[in-house]
Length: 201
Image (cartoon, rainbow, N blue to C red; front, side, top):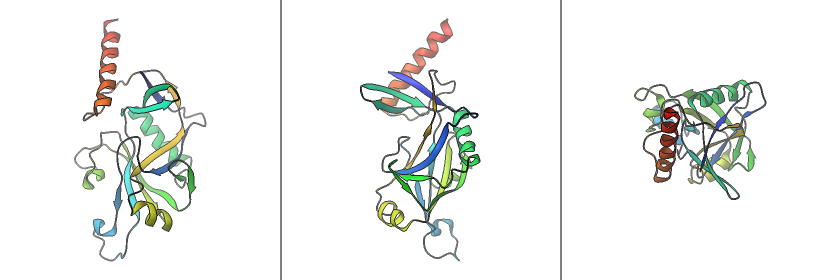
C-alpha cells in the first residue's frame, strides 16, 4: 500500500482552508471541551465554550481510500509547523465547518501552538499525550446550535483540517509515533523495510 507524504508549498495557494468539527477525526485524537471551572476562574460564570485539541500530528499514518485506491498519508514535523503558521498568516482562523460539509459561523481559532515539551506543554494539563511537533489549537464556539446540539451531546469529538496539499512520494525521515494500532503497525513495518533497503543501496 502506498505511503504518501503531504507537503506545503509556501509560495502556492496550497494550505489549510478550515478547521472542521467532526465525530471521527482522522488523526484519532478527541478534543477537550474546556469549561470555566477547569481554568478555575472564579469571576467567570457559565461555560467558556472553548474546545482544545490536536489539529495535526506529525508522522501519524492516516488511512485514505479513493474508490479502489487505498493508501496512507502523513505530515512531517516541518509540514505541520508550516501549516500552523500559514493558517494564521492567511487569516483563516475564523473558517470552520461541520463534518467537512457545512460552513459554520461563530467558531474561531483563538490559540495555536506546537507541542515542544512532553512534560510542561499546556496540552498535558488537559490530559492529552501528543507527540512532539503536534499542532494543538483552542477554538472558541460562539454558536449556540453547535455548542448545545453537537458539542454538549458528544456528536462531535475532535478536529479535522481541510485544505490543499501536494503529494510527495517519500518516507518519513523521523520515526513514526509510538502506540500505533494494528493497522498502523503494518505501515511502520513497510517504512522500516523501505529504510533498510535504502540504507543498503
